[in-house]
Image 1 (cartoon, rainbow, N blue to C red):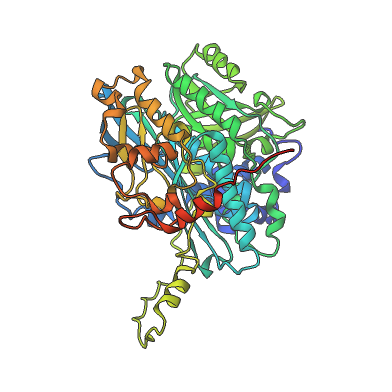
Image 2: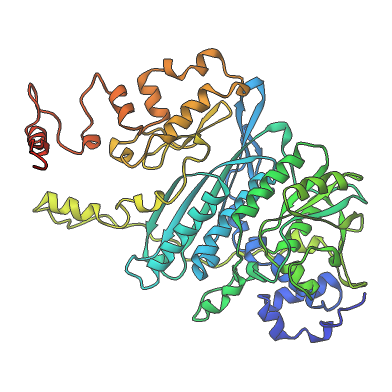
Length: 563
């Protein structure tokens, strides 16, 4: 094998190995797997694939203890997302819920807005990679003490990042939770989740197959951003945390939207053999996972990778974590057809390699072989650790609890604590009505969406109180009703098309918070809502005195104008 001119094996020193996040024992395993010393490209590939973010080398042992099998589980761990049977929809089609939850903690701590935003973008790609259209986002956030000097900045950035990306890409955020604890002072927990819906017989998987099939790169161009982001995610934070900001990726939700539509359009054909998104570790992770799952090898020509910067090395292209990119294996002869779709959506398309039967990853750059390593050690033989840990102590029983002297004051203090206080500032920043499909909006316990005539509960049932309806106007209500009456292509039965004949309570659940005219029509036979009127209820038998007084004050006397 010809070594790269810029990074021969002889320059691999213990310091370089440590910079790549590999221990001495792990580097010895690299030497054993290769039978020689690696060059810099190969070392970088091993470092990101054996990072905690990609290999779960510390958590995989414990994750295996979780139940993953059930009659309704179509696909468990090992793919881009989980797949659950949710029954049949219109036309008797069997449907599946495809969902993914992922943490983006380290990037969000270093650069909260972009870290949280790209976390949302990554799980969106995990979902539509499997052929599902994303229909809803959720999140679970854990922050440190509110009075921590950095926490205000982190909370604001993370919330705006989640809302900004989800709102722009057009997938509603329909639920979430936020809590505070001093244990998260040193690093926050940012969990994002996406749910999609697909037909069970139209689900795509990542296993590459077919020797000679073309390997295709689609989406955005590759740049020098996010390099070693996966390795950074396995490190501890010190005083130099701010210096790691270049390892945080920067996403573009508008490009993500184009990528979703282009991929779903191509998925409607028979052109795709396998597909995988480029997330952590970028092109390295996607290519290794596709090849190892299929038990095949691959040969990539790095010169053909779309690049937005000049002079990029193979090391940079393989480890770049530029966002909004996908890797595919296509059927032979379908390249022109697929290219036309992605060019229509103004996205890059390039054939960058072929599937081989060698079981190895071979990279070619400027006519030289810059990487030639077996795939098995990268994925299947990654290190696995049982880290020492201290069991969580059992919570002590409450003793000597003082009796309250002022119940009202104590209740006010309790309601003002960070873990109980209103989250309204957060969820008001999320667009939760994209497509007018959200049946139950944030503020209650139930998160429900209606997609193509199929309604599914994704959390326990609950209801809103009217006070959360005040700031909504009538537009979502109009859209929801128009969707029921004016979409004949949805194939609804006649009784389902006429939303006006639905019971009053049902109409209120589908589209709460209409305008004043709607409120008068809907509530003509019941007492006026206190919150809507923003004053106390009408007194029995007569007009409320404050209303009458206001009317007298508003009356204008007739006065002569002019001579």
